[in-house]
Image (cartoon, rainbow, N blue to C red; front, top):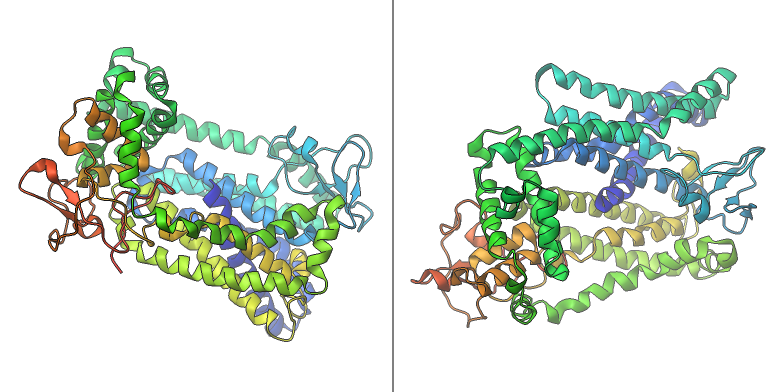
Length: 592
């Protein structure tokens, strides 16, 4: 969800701005019309449909991967669509009013008003945000009565469009025609909203008021439809897919109670194990509803193996903190000396946090004034250049992990990896354009968009504001790709089976195997202590001891000794056999 939010800001937002800047200027040049007229007319004709398609394009692209579209339910598409729309809408609000704290007038009852028109925009305060359903970042000031936060329109529209994409990928035959209805409804509401703002006719205002009164219920309706279909598929899968229910679930007939009991044994570890297991099994059951059994067999075998391990550890005595800590320390060896890399994005983001975070309030507007005058823009630009270099390194690391994430049986790490790449690409593109303007005639304090603006929001898009937003993109790339995707070192020697568990469950997979081994599971499941480096390497191709995983021996660097219990993995530069604990969904990557 957070990654989808970041993609909405740095992926969809950047792509939309570039496309709209391009086609409006080309059309203005060809038609001879003033650019302002072209921008005004396109705001309610072309822009709404283009924006909605771009906002759901990450879901369309993710669905091109068979394992992703089969392992995501309709609920995932709706929720992720809402995240994409929320990120896009927040970017628009920050560009419009991010530099206005000194003009903001506090309203009685909470919130602020920006005095720029007869019906000035309203920024809701905490009291309005936490007492409203889907509150938007901005609204229109009420003439009479208490001020309330308006429904977040971009979130509503993209949640609707997300349901349409989900129907497209998860239905067959004539039912796919229904996918166009939610997308068309979202685009039409968006067009009416922009038309009312541009033309301000009485009929348009009436249409918009009617639609806005119903907008709050649209995400609930989408979720109700999606969850009804998803729950049916999950229950059907549990009855037909073998080996995916624990002994306690079969005995009690209540999955929720069994999982809650398991999570309560040692909540520090068992809670995460239970949640990740439920998520992994959920992906399998969704895939089983759309795929023939032989295509889901690798993932089913992995889930069945983990189910057996959970059965063996479904008791308090299996969870021994001393043993777990000892094996986690072994697994994490090799990464601790490079944990200092985590400090780099934390330091780089500080100016942006002070500028757009702390300085965005009326009482702290002086802090924002500091960054907009004197040497402040140069400071933001300097940090932005450093952030651009960091994002470039992250992007290279992510691209190197492209193939290893593609061969996993679980689709969620694949989608997360592609979302991170989209965020990095959007941030890098924005950084390069800002660098070109900042080092050119505009300077750090100049306009990022020259001549006339495309959208009203871009009229305030100054270079230093863009660099401040660029710094925030580091949050979506945290932890650094080197730690999250094994670009900065290997994890200590563990068994090949542990590497597979870690790729599916994250660090909780190692914890689960440790608990099972200490409770009497075969020793081949136990993490082995680090061994000296050897020259032997596993043969290329899939790991023969675990054919169901799809993980390559090149990604794991596993070496098999004559005895099954001595399977170990070499520590190789640029690999991560167990997916570092800073990103549980990470996967092994190829060598440099």
